[in-house]
Image (cartoon, rainbow, N blue to C red):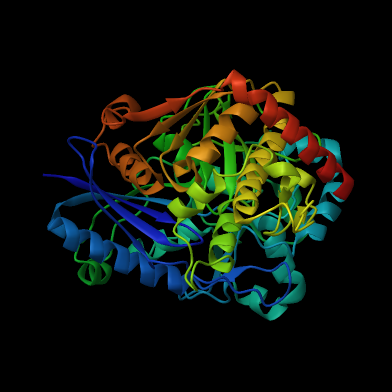
Length: 497
């Protein structure tokens, strides 16, 4: 039998999944650590992680998978990698990380990106990059150049988090056009790395990794690593993608008009288009989708809310029951005891760095209208979940304004979509049908590896085992109340901007 291994390198944990290639069904999954990986915040607005920590947990997650499934590692036929987007990893000629990774929610490069947008000219940036350089990987590298010149001089290659994990497996430093686009290195007119941005930032082009197709053999597992992991030498790493393009892929969202969502640490709505679409304010961002085959375009327009599951997690840790954190199911049950709108208690969930949808402002999270005689834990928990949904609605309206009409949204049956209250608020506020599927990022990465290694001859074959769990529609008897609550939330937000 053949098995496919998928990794999902998140900011909270590393998940590994083994999939039976013949059926497309999950055999075993494991994540490491069981709680959350730490983020280093040396200064306010900074967020870093040690790449070596990612590798340690990738090893542990796979070992747990193999133990749970009793699968012989020699039967693993291909490896795919999904990873947290927009991070920066810098390595020297010995492939050693020169500093901690500056990860996706780090805000230090916001002003660098704003200045670059002005220097490039807004029309040029939007036409060629489809975005402002913003707080993306290229701007983070410029920050290193300006503030840590001794480290910058020693950089052999820069890469994204998934490229780093693939390098540890294979010894090859490779990336994809999709990855370069998410780092803001890609010129959509030239269909190549942006010479103008690299020159503006003073970044030599040879610091970028070699490009490979998203679905292709991008390297093979080295002998010493195979021994360490209990795999066989030479297994191909045959797929890699950022977590949100990969989430869309895992849900078989590949065609124009199809839309995917996630609600983990951050919350995302990701819509596929065959146009080089952009928002004039760069509140949402366009990247190359996994199935792009230029000149036939496939792009993904991404709305991201940084403060999503992390808000729910923060409440869980800080509003305890008998000194212990609540289970998420308990939070959902308590939240459901409060009415729609939480009797005037309103939460802005923006407490995890600068928010692109707010034009890179960092307004932090706020609770408004708290009445000590009226509100209880149930109101706090409900207002938080509604606030997250309302933030997604705010960005969803930007997508709609770009002409991306989305009547159906697909999501994995995971994270905040496990909450009945969250799902109810989502469909009634957004106004679209929600479809939940039995999949996740690590499973999607495994199926992508099967495509890239030629085990599957088509996307249709790869997704033969994908099944819908449930769907939910807006309820007219509740939608009006959610619209009213959102209207009040929006007025509060506009007062903070």
